Length: 182
Image (cartoon, rainbow, N blue to C red; front, side, top):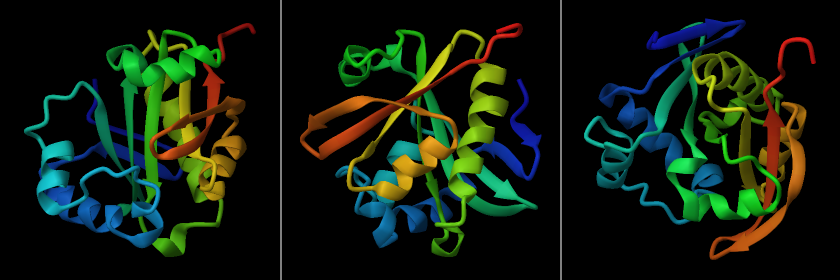
């Protein structure tokens, strides 16, 4: 499989250790860290979670537009995280669903529809194109993070329901793979 995917205005390439300073800065921006659910965004935490030494089965991608870094997005099989997936499954997500997490890095790129376009392109051109076993993408945004769940809506995700955890109330959403002939 290719390490880079380019469709439309977005290019997606696997995150490298050289990208970690950029990601560290993005994760520590107040508009992002507020909703990063208590994850360790210190330098050591970012290296541990997103660096090449992490053996987690998820895929971390850097998003660029005309070679300019725009954001970060990851995908993973929910089946690899059954405890975390349970709220999604109880709301109707399929067991073959992928999960995604994402951010638009620069504040000046937010609020302009870029996030929804980035998500839509990533789901179509990376998640479903590279992973035929994943028939759905299910994710959630904190209910207070209106920009995030609105970006999902604009990207074609439908509302599944809400669930609560130690970080707040979340709006679970999903989008299904479009099958040929359907």
